[in-house]
Amino acid sequence: MTSLDWLIVIGLNGSIVAYGFYLSRGVHSTTDWFLAGRGLPWWLVGLSMYATAIDASDLVADSGATYTLGMSVFVANWVGVTAGWVLAAYFVFKPMYRMGMYTNAEYLEARFSPGVRVLCAFVQVQYRTMVLAIIGTTMFLTLSIVSGVSEGAAWGMVGAIAVLAAVYTAFGGLRSVAVTDSLQFVVMSVAALVIWVFVWGQVGGWQGAEQRLAAVDAELPAQLLHVGYGNLDLKDVSGQTAEEIERLLLLGGQYNAADATITKFTPAWIVALAFIIIGLAYSIVNHTQAMRMFAAKSEWDMKMSVFVAGAVLLVMTFFNLSMGIMGRALFPEQAALPQGRQDAIYPYLVSQIEAVGLKGLVVAGILAAALSTYDSIGSSLSALLTRDVYARLIVRDGDDHHYLRVGQWLTPAVIAVSFFYVPFMLEGGMFLFYVDLTSTFVIPLLTIFLLGTCTRVHRRSGMIALLAGALYGIVRLVAPYLAENYGVVVLPAFMVNSYAAYIISMLVTAGTAVLISLFVGWEDLSAILHEEEGEWLRSSQQAVRQLEDTSMGQEQGARSARIPLFLSLGIVAVGCFLAFVVFW
Image (cartoon, rainbow, N blue to C red; front, side, top):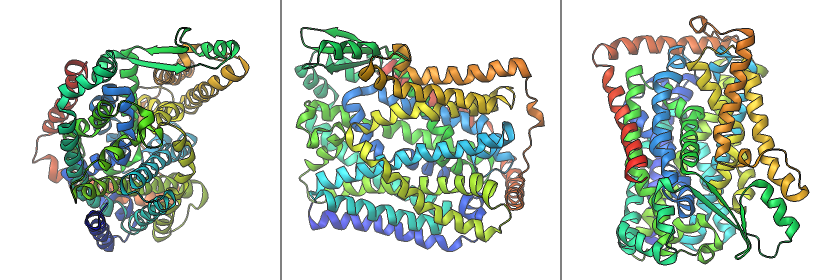
Protein backbone atom coordinates (compact mmCIF):
# COMPACT_ATOMS: atom_id res chain seq x y z
CA MET A 1 0.00 0.00 0.00
CA THR A 2 1.19 3.51 -0.84
CA SER A 3 1.24 6.56 1.41
CA LEU A 4 -1.93 7.77 -0.30
CA ASP A 5 -3.67 4.48 0.52
CA TRP A 6 -2.74 4.82 4.19
CA LEU A 7 -3.85 8.44 4.18
CA ILE A 8 -7.28 7.39 2.91
CA VAL A 9 -7.55 4.65 5.56
CA ILE A 10 -6.59 6.94 8.43
CA GLY A 11 -8.45 10.00 7.12
CA LEU A 12 -11.84 8.33 6.59
CA ASN A 13 -11.91 6.28 9.77
CA GLY A 14 -10.14 8.85 11.90
CA SER A 15 -12.67 11.56 11.07
CA ILE A 16 -15.59 9.25 11.92
CA VAL A 17 -14.05 8.25 15.25
CA ALA A 18 -13.34 11.92 16.05
CA TYR A 19 -16.99 12.72 15.39
CA GLY A 20 -17.96 9.87 17.72
CA PHE A 21 -15.95 11.53 20.49
CA TYR A 22 -17.66 14.83 19.71
CA LEU A 23 -21.11 13.24 20.11
CA SER A 24 -20.17 11.86 23.53
CA ARG A 25 -20.63 15.33 25.03
CA GLY A 26 -24.39 14.78 25.27
CA VAL A 27 -24.23 11.65 27.44
CA HIS A 28 -25.27 12.38 31.02
CA SER A 29 -27.31 9.35 32.14
CA THR A 30 -27.68 5.63 31.62
CA THR A 31 -30.77 6.28 29.48
CA ASP A 32 -28.59 8.38 27.18
CA TRP A 33 -25.79 5.81 27.14
CA PHE A 34 -27.80 2.58 26.80
CA LEU A 35 -30.77 3.80 24.72
CA ALA A 36 -29.69 7.15 23.23
CA GLY A 37 -32.50 8.78 25.20
CA ARG A 38 -34.93 6.71 23.12
CA GLY A 39 -34.90 9.39 20.46
CA LEU A 40 -33.47 7.82 17.29
CA PRO A 41 -35.47 8.15 14.03
CA TRP A 42 -36.33 5.12 11.91
CA TRP A 43 -33.77 5.71 9.18
CA LEU A 44 -30.89 6.04 11.64
CA VAL A 45 -31.96 2.92 13.53
CA GLY A 46 -32.23 0.98 10.26
CA LEU A 47 -28.83 2.05 8.94
CA SER A 48 -27.22 1.27 12.28
CA MET A 49 -28.87 -2.17 12.32
CA TYR A 50 -27.48 -2.89 8.87
CA ALA A 51 -23.99 -1.53 9.67
CA THR A 52 -23.86 -3.80 12.71
CA ALA A 53 -25.20 -6.80 10.80
CA ILE A 54 -22.74 -6.45 7.90
CA ASP A 55 -19.37 -6.14 9.52
CA ALA A 56 -15.84 -7.06 8.57
CA SER A 57 -16.67 -10.72 9.12
CA ASP A 58 -19.27 -10.54 6.32
CA LEU A 59 -16.74 -9.02 3.97
CA VAL A 60 -13.97 -11.51 4.78
CA ALA A 61 -15.18 -14.52 6.79
CA ASP A 62 -18.49 -14.86 4.92
CA SER A 63 -16.69 -14.51 1.58
CA GLY A 64 -14.52 -17.37 2.77
CA ALA A 65 -17.72 -19.29 3.45
CA THR A 66 -19.15 -18.67 -0.03
CA TYR A 67 -15.75 -19.67 -1.47
CA THR A 68 -16.56 -23.23 -0.30
CA LEU A 69 -20.33 -23.30 0.33
CA GLY A 70 -21.61 -20.99 -2.42
CA MET A 71 -25.04 -19.38 -2.64
CA SER A 72 -26.56 -21.30 0.27
CA VAL A 73 -24.87 -18.85 2.67
CA PHE A 74 -26.96 -16.03 1.19
CA VAL A 75 -30.11 -17.55 2.71
CA ALA A 76 -29.03 -16.48 6.20
CA ASN A 77 -29.26 -12.78 5.27
CA TRP A 78 -31.87 -12.77 2.52
CA VAL A 79 -34.41 -14.83 4.49
CA GLY A 80 -33.24 -15.46 8.05
CA VAL A 81 -32.14 -11.98 9.13
CA THR A 82 -34.91 -10.09 7.31
CA ALA A 83 -37.63 -12.41 8.67
CA GLY A 84 -36.00 -12.21 12.10
CA TRP A 85 -36.18 -8.43 12.07
CA VAL A 86 -39.90 -8.60 11.25
CA LEU A 87 -40.55 -11.13 14.04
CA ALA A 88 -38.55 -8.99 16.45
CA ALA A 89 -40.29 -5.69 15.67
CA TYR A 90 -43.84 -7.06 15.56
CA PHE A 91 -43.76 -9.85 18.17
CA VAL A 92 -40.62 -10.48 20.20
CA PHE A 93 -39.35 -6.95 20.93
CA LYS A 94 -42.70 -5.14 20.93
CA PRO A 95 -43.70 -6.11 24.51
CA MET A 96 -40.17 -5.30 25.68
CA TYR A 97 -40.37 -1.86 24.08
CA ARG A 98 -43.73 -1.15 25.70
CA MET A 99 -42.52 -2.25 29.15
CA GLY A 100 -39.56 0.13 28.95
CA MET A 101 -36.90 -2.57 28.93
CA TYR A 102 -33.26 -1.85 28.22
CA THR A 103 -32.19 -5.37 27.21
CA ASN A 104 -33.86 -8.37 25.62
CA ALA A 105 -32.68 -10.49 28.57
CA GLU A 106 -34.95 -8.50 30.95
CA TYR A 107 -38.01 -9.95 29.25
CA LEU A 108 -36.90 -13.49 30.05
CA GLU A 109 -37.18 -12.79 33.77
CA ALA A 110 -40.68 -11.41 33.31
CA ARG A 111 -41.71 -14.40 31.20
CA PHE A 112 -39.72 -17.20 32.83
CA SER A 113 -37.30 -16.62 35.73
CA PRO A 114 -34.29 -14.56 36.91
CA GLY A 115 -32.03 -17.50 36.11
CA VAL A 116 -33.05 -17.49 32.44
CA ARG A 117 -32.36 -13.76 32.29
CA VAL A 118 -28.84 -14.09 33.70
CA LEU A 119 -28.05 -17.12 31.57
CA CYS A 120 -29.20 -15.19 28.49
CA ALA A 121 -26.71 -12.43 29.28
CA PHE A 122 -23.81 -14.87 29.56
CA VAL A 123 -24.80 -16.77 26.40
CA GLN A 124 -24.79 -13.50 24.48
CA VAL A 125 -21.37 -12.63 25.85
CA GLN A 126 -20.06 -15.98 24.58
CA TYR A 127 -21.86 -15.59 21.25
CA ARG A 128 -20.88 -12.03 20.42
CA THR A 129 -17.30 -12.07 21.71
CA MET A 130 -16.79 -14.95 19.28
CA VAL A 131 -17.93 -12.60 16.51
CA LEU A 132 -15.52 -9.93 17.76
CA ALA A 133 -12.73 -12.51 17.49
CA ILE A 134 -13.77 -13.18 13.88
CA ILE A 135 -13.56 -9.44 13.21
CA GLY A 136 -10.13 -9.17 14.83
CA THR A 137 -8.85 -12.08 12.73
CA THR A 138 -10.43 -10.50 9.66
CA MET A 139 -8.53 -7.28 10.22
CA PHE A 140 -5.31 -9.22 10.81
CA LEU A 141 -5.68 -11.06 7.50
CA THR A 142 -6.52 -7.84 5.67
CA LEU A 143 -3.60 -5.88 7.04
CA SER A 144 -1.04 -8.68 6.67
CA ILE A 145 -2.09 -9.71 3.15
CA VAL A 146 -3.04 -6.37 1.60
CA SER A 147 -0.59 -3.98 3.23
CA GLY A 148 2.26 -6.46 3.55
CA VAL A 149 3.12 -5.59 7.17
CA SER A 150 4.52 -8.27 9.45
CA GLU A 151 2.22 -10.45 11.53
CA GLY A 152 3.32 -8.73 14.73
CA ALA A 153 2.67 -5.29 13.28
CA ALA A 154 -0.72 -6.42 11.94
CA TRP A 155 -1.82 -7.69 15.36
CA GLY A 156 -0.53 -4.48 16.94
CA MET A 157 -2.71 -2.45 14.58
CA VAL A 158 -5.71 -4.69 15.33
CA GLY A 159 -5.19 -4.10 19.03
CA ALA A 160 -4.96 -0.34 18.49
CA ILE A 161 -8.20 -0.30 16.49
CA ALA A 162 -9.95 -2.33 19.21
CA VAL A 163 -8.76 0.10 21.89
CA LEU A 164 -9.88 3.09 19.83
CA ALA A 165 -13.36 1.59 19.31
CA ALA A 166 -13.62 0.74 23.01
CA VAL A 167 -12.71 4.26 24.12
CA TYR A 168 -15.09 6.25 21.93
CA THR A 169 -17.90 3.76 22.62
CA ALA A 170 -17.32 3.97 26.37
CA PHE A 171 -17.64 7.76 26.26
CA GLY A 172 -20.41 8.12 23.67
CA GLY A 173 -22.77 5.19 24.25
CA LEU A 174 -25.50 4.21 21.80
CA ARG A 175 -26.14 7.65 20.27
CA SER A 176 -22.49 7.99 19.29
CA VAL A 177 -22.40 4.38 18.06
CA ALA A 178 -25.58 4.70 15.96
CA VAL A 179 -24.40 7.86 14.19
CA THR A 180 -20.88 6.57 13.53
CA ASP A 181 -22.37 3.27 12.32
CA SER A 182 -24.33 5.18 9.69
CA LEU A 183 -21.21 7.04 8.52
CA GLN A 184 -19.20 3.81 8.50
CA PHE A 185 -22.00 2.24 6.45
CA VAL A 186 -21.29 4.75 3.68
CA VAL A 187 -17.55 4.03 3.69
CA MET A 188 -17.84 0.25 3.75
CA SER A 189 -20.61 0.19 1.11
CA VAL A 190 -18.65 2.35 -1.32
CA ALA A 191 -15.54 0.25 -0.73
CA ALA A 192 -17.44 -3.01 -1.21
CA LEU A 193 -18.90 -1.82 -4.51
CA VAL A 194 -15.50 -0.66 -5.76
CA ILE A 195 -13.79 -4.01 -5.17
CA TRP A 196 -16.83 -5.88 -6.52
CA VAL A 197 -16.75 -3.97 -9.83
CA PHE A 198 -13.03 -4.68 -10.11
CA VAL A 199 -13.45 -8.45 -9.52
CA TRP A 200 -16.63 -8.67 -11.63
CA GLY A 201 -14.73 -7.35 -14.61
CA GLN A 202 -11.78 -9.62 -13.95
CA VAL A 203 -13.87 -12.79 -13.77
CA GLY A 204 -16.06 -11.89 -16.77
CA GLY A 205 -19.36 -11.50 -14.95
CA TRP A 206 -21.62 -14.26 -13.66
CA GLN A 207 -21.37 -16.23 -16.91
CA GLY A 208 -17.60 -15.97 -16.82
CA ALA A 209 -17.53 -17.25 -13.25
CA GLU A 210 -19.73 -20.19 -14.23
CA GLN A 211 -17.45 -21.09 -17.13
CA ARG A 212 -14.30 -20.84 -15.01
CA LEU A 213 -15.82 -23.04 -12.29
CA ALA A 214 -16.95 -25.63 -14.85
CA ALA A 215 -13.42 -25.79 -16.24
CA VAL A 216 -12.21 -26.88 -12.77
CA ASP A 217 -15.04 -29.33 -12.05
CA ALA A 218 -18.24 -29.87 -14.01
CA GLU A 219 -20.23 -30.10 -10.74
CA LEU A 220 -18.78 -26.93 -9.23
CA PRO A 221 -21.19 -24.39 -10.88
CA ALA A 222 -24.23 -26.28 -9.58
CA GLN A 223 -22.62 -26.68 -6.18
CA LEU A 224 -21.72 -23.00 -5.72
CA LEU A 225 -24.20 -21.04 -7.86
CA HIS A 226 -27.41 -22.67 -6.64
CA VAL A 227 -28.97 -22.80 -3.18
CA GLY A 228 -30.77 -26.04 -4.07
CA TYR A 229 -27.66 -28.16 -4.55
CA GLY A 230 -27.08 -29.03 -0.89
CA ASN A 231 -23.76 -29.33 0.90
CA LEU A 232 -21.12 -31.80 -0.27
CA ASP A 233 -18.28 -32.47 2.16
CA LEU A 234 -15.28 -34.52 1.01
CA LYS A 235 -12.72 -35.67 3.56
CA ASP A 236 -9.38 -37.04 2.39
CA VAL A 237 -8.53 -40.18 4.40
CA SER A 238 -5.49 -41.30 2.43
CA GLY A 239 -2.80 -42.57 4.77
CA GLN A 240 -5.27 -43.48 7.52
CA THR A 241 -5.70 -47.01 8.80
CA ALA A 242 -8.79 -49.12 8.22
CA GLU A 243 -9.71 -48.74 11.91
CA GLU A 244 -9.43 -44.95 11.74
CA ILE A 245 -11.61 -44.87 8.62
CA GLU A 246 -14.17 -47.10 10.31
CA ARG A 247 -14.36 -44.71 13.24
CA LEU A 248 -14.82 -41.74 10.94
CA LEU A 249 -17.71 -43.53 9.26
CA LEU A 250 -19.47 -43.66 12.63
CA LEU A 251 -20.21 -39.96 12.01
CA GLY A 252 -21.88 -40.73 8.69
CA GLY A 253 -20.81 -40.59 5.07
CA GLN A 254 -19.75 -43.02 2.38
CA TYR A 255 -16.22 -44.31 1.87
CA ASN A 256 -14.80 -44.35 -1.64
CA ALA A 257 -11.76 -46.65 -1.69
CA ALA A 258 -10.75 -45.60 -5.21
CA ASP A 259 -9.85 -42.02 -4.24
CA ALA A 260 -9.61 -42.57 -0.46
CA THR A 261 -12.33 -40.08 0.50
CA ILE A 262 -15.36 -40.02 2.76
CA THR A 263 -18.28 -38.14 1.24
CA LYS A 264 -21.02 -36.56 3.34
CA PHE A 265 -24.01 -34.96 1.68
CA THR A 266 -26.55 -32.73 3.43
CA PRO A 267 -29.80 -32.08 1.50
CA ALA A 268 -30.48 -28.52 0.38
CA TRP A 269 -33.59 -28.09 2.51
CA ILE A 270 -31.67 -28.90 5.71
CA VAL A 271 -28.86 -26.50 4.80
CA ALA A 272 -31.32 -23.74 3.87
CA LEU A 273 -33.35 -24.20 7.05
CA ALA A 274 -30.18 -24.12 9.14
CA PHE A 275 -29.12 -20.82 7.58
CA ILE A 276 -32.60 -19.37 8.12
CA ILE A 277 -32.37 -20.30 11.80
CA ILE A 278 -28.90 -18.72 11.98
CA GLY A 279 -30.35 -15.50 10.58
CA LEU A 280 -33.31 -15.55 12.96
CA ALA A 281 -30.96 -16.02 15.90
CA TYR A 282 -28.88 -13.07 14.81
CA SER A 283 -31.90 -10.75 14.68
CA ILE A 284 -33.61 -11.90 17.88
CA VAL A 285 -30.99 -13.20 20.32
CA ASN A 286 -28.37 -10.61 19.42
CA HIS A 287 -28.82 -7.60 21.71
CA THR A 288 -26.97 -5.30 19.30
CA GLN A 289 -30.16 -5.42 17.23
CA ALA A 290 -32.54 -5.19 20.19
CA MET A 291 -30.63 -2.22 21.61
CA ARG A 292 -31.13 -0.26 18.41
CA MET A 293 -34.83 -1.05 18.13
CA PHE A 294 -35.34 -0.11 21.79
CA ALA A 295 -33.73 3.27 21.06
CA ALA A 296 -36.32 4.15 18.39
CA LYS A 297 -38.41 7.16 19.34
CA SER A 298 -41.70 5.32 18.68
CA GLU A 299 -43.06 1.91 17.79
CA TRP A 300 -43.65 3.17 14.27
CA ASP A 301 -39.98 4.11 13.96
CA MET A 302 -38.92 0.74 15.37
CA LYS A 303 -41.01 -1.12 12.78
CA MET A 304 -40.06 1.17 9.90
CA SER A 305 -36.36 0.63 10.66
CA VAL A 306 -36.80 -3.01 9.59
CA PHE A 307 -37.59 -1.92 6.04
CA VAL A 308 -34.54 0.35 5.84
CA ALA A 309 -32.15 -2.28 7.21
CA GLY A 310 -33.71 -5.07 5.13
CA ALA A 311 -33.68 -3.16 1.84
CA VAL A 312 -29.98 -2.34 2.14
CA LEU A 313 -29.20 -5.88 3.32
CA LEU A 314 -30.86 -7.50 0.29
CA VAL A 315 -28.75 -5.50 -2.14
CA MET A 316 -25.42 -5.47 -0.33
CA THR A 317 -25.54 -9.17 0.53
CA PHE A 318 -25.18 -9.98 -3.16
CA PHE A 319 -22.23 -7.63 -3.64
CA ASN A 320 -20.48 -8.67 -0.44
CA LEU A 321 -20.93 -12.44 -0.47
CA SER A 322 -20.59 -13.05 -4.21
CA MET A 323 -16.95 -12.04 -3.81
CA GLY A 324 -16.16 -15.48 -2.45
CA ILE A 325 -17.76 -17.25 -5.41
CA MET A 326 -16.00 -15.05 -7.95
CA GLY A 327 -12.79 -15.53 -5.99
CA ARG A 328 -13.21 -19.30 -6.27
CA ALA A 329 -13.58 -18.91 -10.04
CA LEU A 330 -10.36 -16.87 -10.23
CA PHE A 331 -8.36 -18.89 -7.69
CA PRO A 332 -9.95 -22.36 -7.44
CA GLU A 333 -7.13 -23.96 -5.42
CA GLN A 334 -7.40 -23.05 -1.75
CA ALA A 335 -3.81 -24.15 -1.14
CA ALA A 336 -2.64 -21.33 -3.44
CA LEU A 337 -4.23 -18.65 -1.23
CA PRO A 338 -2.17 -16.93 1.49
CA GLN A 339 -1.71 -19.34 4.41
CA GLY A 340 -3.87 -21.80 2.47
CA ARG A 341 -6.99 -20.29 4.09
CA GLN A 342 -10.39 -19.86 2.46
CA ASP A 343 -10.84 -16.77 4.65
CA ALA A 344 -7.94 -15.13 2.82
CA ILE A 345 -9.84 -14.85 -0.49
CA TYR A 346 -11.30 -11.36 0.08
CA PRO A 347 -8.02 -9.74 1.25
CA TYR A 348 -6.21 -11.57 -1.55
CA LEU A 349 -8.58 -10.11 -4.15
CA VAL A 350 -8.02 -6.65 -2.66
CA SER A 351 -4.26 -7.16 -2.90
CA GLN A 352 -4.61 -7.59 -6.68
CA ILE A 353 -5.79 -3.97 -7.11
CA GLU A 354 -3.09 -1.88 -8.73
CA ALA A 355 -4.78 1.54 -8.94
CA VAL A 356 -3.35 3.94 -6.38
CA GLY A 357 -5.92 4.93 -3.78
CA LEU A 358 -8.47 2.19 -4.51
CA LYS A 359 -6.71 -0.33 -2.31
CA GLY A 360 -6.72 2.20 0.52
CA LEU A 361 -10.43 2.84 0.04
CA VAL A 362 -11.25 -0.88 0.28
CA VAL A 363 -9.09 -1.36 3.38
CA ALA A 364 -10.75 1.73 4.88
CA GLY A 365 -14.13 0.10 4.23
CA ILE A 366 -13.10 -3.15 5.93
CA LEU A 367 -11.79 -1.27 8.96
CA ALA A 368 -14.95 0.88 9.06
CA ALA A 369 -17.04 -2.30 9.09
CA ALA A 370 -14.89 -3.65 11.92
CA LEU A 371 -15.20 -0.45 13.96
CA SER A 372 -18.98 -0.37 13.52
CA THR A 373 -19.27 -3.83 15.04
CA TYR A 374 -16.64 -3.41 17.73
CA ASP A 375 -18.53 -0.42 19.09
CA SER A 376 -21.95 -2.05 18.69
CA ILE A 377 -21.09 -5.33 20.40
CA GLY A 378 -19.05 -3.57 23.07
CA SER A 379 -21.93 -1.30 24.04
CA SER A 380 -24.63 -3.98 23.87
CA LEU A 381 -22.74 -6.56 25.93
CA SER A 382 -21.81 -3.97 28.55
CA ALA A 383 -25.53 -3.11 28.78
CA LEU A 384 -26.39 -6.77 29.37
CA LEU A 385 -23.68 -7.28 31.98
CA THR A 386 -24.49 -4.00 33.76
CA ARG A 387 -28.27 -4.41 34.00
CA ASP A 388 -28.83 -8.15 33.89
CA VAL A 389 -25.90 -9.31 36.02
CA TYR A 390 -24.21 -6.48 37.96
CA ALA A 391 -27.27 -4.42 38.95
CA ARG A 392 -29.50 -7.48 39.27
CA LEU A 393 -27.22 -9.65 41.42
CA ILE A 394 -24.18 -7.73 42.71
CA VAL A 395 -24.82 -4.02 43.44
CA ARG A 396 -28.55 -3.31 43.52
CA ASP A 397 -28.69 0.09 45.23
CA GLY A 398 -26.21 2.29 43.34
CA ASP A 399 -27.07 5.59 41.73
CA ASP A 400 -27.41 6.28 38.03
CA HIS A 401 -23.89 7.70 37.70
CA HIS A 402 -22.41 4.55 39.25
CA TYR A 403 -24.06 2.26 36.69
CA LEU A 404 -23.11 4.62 33.86
CA ARG A 405 -19.46 4.23 34.84
CA VAL A 406 -19.80 0.45 35.16
CA GLY A 407 -21.23 0.22 31.64
CA GLN A 408 -18.44 2.39 30.30
CA TRP A 409 -15.68 0.33 31.92
CA LEU A 410 -17.20 -2.98 30.85
CA THR A 411 -17.01 -1.96 27.17
CA PRO A 412 -13.20 -2.31 26.81
CA ALA A 413 -13.27 -5.40 29.04
CA VAL A 414 -15.72 -7.16 26.71
CA ILE A 415 -13.66 -6.30 23.64
CA ALA A 416 -10.49 -7.54 25.35
CA VAL A 417 -12.08 -10.91 26.22
CA SER A 418 -12.82 -11.55 22.54
CA PHE A 419 -9.12 -12.03 21.77
CA PHE A 420 -9.15 -15.34 23.68
CA TYR A 421 -11.09 -16.83 20.73
CA VAL A 422 -8.48 -15.79 18.14
CA PRO A 423 -6.37 -19.01 18.28
CA PHE A 424 -9.46 -21.03 17.31
CA MET A 425 -10.11 -18.68 14.38
CA LEU A 426 -6.58 -19.20 13.07
CA GLU A 427 -6.97 -22.99 12.98
CA GLY A 428 -9.55 -23.18 10.18
CA GLY A 429 -12.51 -21.51 8.48
CA MET A 430 -13.97 -18.82 10.73
CA PHE A 431 -17.51 -19.13 9.41
CA LEU A 432 -17.53 -22.92 9.81
CA PHE A 433 -16.34 -22.53 13.42
CA TYR A 434 -19.19 -20.05 13.97
CA VAL A 435 -21.74 -22.45 12.47
CA ASP A 436 -20.47 -25.34 14.56
CA LEU A 437 -20.59 -23.48 17.88
CA THR A 438 -23.68 -21.28 17.49
CA SER A 439 -26.16 -24.16 17.58
CA THR A 440 -24.97 -25.17 21.06
CA PHE A 441 -26.25 -22.29 23.19
CA VAL A 442 -27.68 -19.60 20.91
CA ILE A 443 -30.37 -21.68 19.22
CA PRO A 444 -31.92 -22.93 22.50
CA LEU A 445 -32.04 -19.27 23.57
CA LEU A 446 -33.70 -18.26 20.27
CA THR A 447 -36.31 -20.98 20.86
CA ILE A 448 -37.00 -19.68 24.37
CA PHE A 449 -37.56 -16.14 23.03
CA LEU A 450 -40.00 -17.42 20.41
CA LEU A 451 -41.81 -19.69 22.86
CA GLY A 452 -42.06 -16.89 25.40
CA THR A 453 -43.66 -14.36 23.06
CA CYS A 454 -45.66 -16.61 20.73
CA THR A 455 -46.90 -19.45 22.97
CA ARG A 456 -48.32 -19.99 26.45
CA VAL A 457 -45.67 -22.42 27.72
CA HIS A 458 -45.36 -22.33 31.51
CA ARG A 459 -42.77 -20.07 33.12
CA ARG A 460 -41.19 -23.04 34.92
CA SER A 461 -40.36 -24.63 31.59
CA GLY A 462 -37.92 -21.90 30.52
CA MET A 463 -34.77 -22.88 32.40
CA ILE A 464 -35.27 -26.62 32.00
CA ALA A 465 -35.89 -26.33 28.24
CA LEU A 466 -32.91 -24.02 27.82
CA LEU A 467 -30.63 -26.45 29.62
CA ALA A 468 -32.00 -29.41 27.66
CA GLY A 469 -31.21 -27.70 24.36
CA ALA A 470 -27.74 -26.69 25.57
CA LEU A 471 -27.05 -30.24 26.79
CA TYR A 472 -27.80 -31.62 23.33
CA GLY A 473 -25.49 -29.00 21.84
CA ILE A 474 -22.62 -29.89 24.17
CA VAL A 475 -23.02 -33.64 23.54
CA ARG A 476 -23.06 -32.97 19.80
CA LEU A 477 -19.78 -31.06 20.06
CA VAL A 478 -17.97 -33.88 21.87
CA ALA A 479 -19.55 -36.69 19.81
CA PRO A 480 -17.06 -36.45 16.89
CA TYR A 481 -14.09 -36.55 19.27
CA LEU A 482 -15.39 -39.65 21.05
CA ALA A 483 -16.21 -41.41 17.78
CA GLU A 484 -12.91 -40.61 16.02
CA ASN A 485 -10.62 -41.36 18.98
CA TYR A 486 -12.41 -44.09 20.92
CA GLY A 487 -15.03 -45.50 18.57
CA VAL A 488 -17.79 -44.48 21.02
CA VAL A 489 -21.13 -43.45 19.52
CA VAL A 490 -23.15 -41.12 21.76
CA LEU A 491 -25.48 -39.73 19.07
CA PRO A 492 -26.78 -41.02 15.74
CA ALA A 493 -24.90 -39.64 12.74
CA PHE A 494 -27.76 -37.36 11.63
CA MET A 495 -27.81 -35.66 15.07
CA VAL A 496 -24.12 -34.81 14.75
CA ASN A 497 -24.53 -33.05 11.40
CA SER A 498 -23.68 -29.33 11.82
CA TYR A 499 -26.71 -28.19 9.80
CA ALA A 500 -29.26 -30.65 11.16
CA ALA A 501 -28.17 -29.62 14.67
CA TYR A 502 -30.00 -26.29 14.28
CA ILE A 503 -33.31 -28.00 13.62
CA ILE A 504 -32.80 -30.65 16.30
CA SER A 505 -31.76 -28.07 18.89
CA MET A 506 -35.00 -26.14 18.37
CA LEU A 507 -37.05 -29.33 18.54
CA VAL A 508 -35.36 -30.51 21.75
CA THR A 509 -35.80 -27.13 23.44
CA ALA A 510 -39.38 -26.56 22.31
CA GLY A 511 -40.38 -30.19 22.97
CA THR A 512 -39.09 -29.97 26.53
CA ALA A 513 -41.01 -26.75 27.21
CA VAL A 514 -44.24 -28.12 25.76
CA LEU A 515 -43.92 -31.40 27.66
CA ILE A 516 -43.45 -29.58 30.97
CA SER A 517 -46.39 -27.28 30.24
CA LEU A 518 -48.63 -30.28 29.57
CA PHE A 519 -48.02 -31.40 33.15
CA VAL A 520 -47.90 -28.10 35.08
CA GLY A 521 -50.26 -26.01 32.96
CA TRP A 522 -50.10 -23.08 30.56
CA GLU A 523 -49.22 -19.47 31.33
CA ASP A 524 -51.58 -16.48 31.27
CA LEU A 525 -49.69 -14.05 29.04
CA SER A 526 -51.99 -11.12 29.86
CA ALA A 527 -50.65 -11.14 33.42
CA ILE A 528 -47.02 -10.49 32.41
CA LEU A 529 -45.92 -7.00 33.45
CA HIS A 530 -42.39 -6.88 34.77
CA GLU A 531 -41.42 -4.47 37.52
CA GLU A 532 -37.71 -4.47 38.34
CA GLU A 533 -36.74 -5.21 41.96
CA GLY A 534 -33.69 -2.98 42.34
CA GLU A 535 -34.25 0.74 42.91
CA TRP A 536 -32.12 1.91 39.97
CA LEU A 537 -33.42 -0.78 37.64
CA ARG A 538 -37.01 0.18 38.47
CA SER A 539 -36.54 3.97 38.27
CA SER A 540 -34.66 3.79 34.96
CA GLN A 541 -37.36 1.53 33.53
CA GLN A 542 -40.08 4.00 34.56
CA ALA A 543 -38.14 6.88 32.99
CA VAL A 544 -38.08 5.05 29.67
CA ARG A 545 -41.80 4.31 29.84
CA GLN A 546 -42.47 8.03 30.17
CA LEU A 547 -40.36 8.73 27.09
CA GLU A 548 -42.29 6.09 25.16
CA ASP A 549 -45.67 7.45 26.23
CA THR A 550 -44.96 10.99 24.97
CA SER A 551 -43.46 9.92 21.63
CA MET A 552 -46.03 7.29 20.78
CA GLY A 553 -48.98 9.65 20.78
CA GLN A 554 -47.27 12.10 18.45
CA GLU A 555 -46.17 9.52 15.89
CA GLN A 556 -48.96 6.97 15.63
CA GLY A 557 -51.74 9.46 15.00
CA ALA A 558 -49.97 10.98 12.02
CA ARG A 559 -48.82 7.91 10.13
CA SER A 560 -50.37 4.63 9.18
CA ALA A 561 -49.08 1.66 11.15
CA ARG A 562 -49.63 -0.58 8.13
CA ILE A 563 -46.95 1.00 5.95
CA PRO A 564 -43.95 -0.49 7.82
CA LEU A 565 -45.60 -3.93 7.88
CA PHE A 566 -46.30 -4.04 4.15
CA LEU A 567 -42.83 -2.76 3.29
CA SER A 568 -41.09 -5.16 5.68
CA LEU A 569 -43.06 -8.19 4.45
CA GLY A 570 -42.20 -7.11 0.91
CA ILE A 571 -38.49 -7.29 1.79
CA VAL A 572 -38.88 -10.81 3.20
CA ALA A 573 -40.83 -11.86 0.10
CA VAL A 574 -38.09 -10.56 -2.20
CA GLY A 575 -35.47 -12.38 -0.14
CA CYS A 576 -37.42 -15.64 -0.41
CA PHE A 577 -37.87 -15.15 -4.15
CA LEU A 578 -34.14 -14.62 -4.66
CA ALA A 579 -33.14 -17.59 -2.52
CA PHE A 580 -35.76 -20.15 -3.49
CA VAL A 581 -36.63 -19.18 -7.06
CA VAL A 582 -33.90 -17.16 -8.78
CA PHE A 583 -30.88 -18.94 -7.30
CA TRP A 584 -32.42 -22.26 -6.28
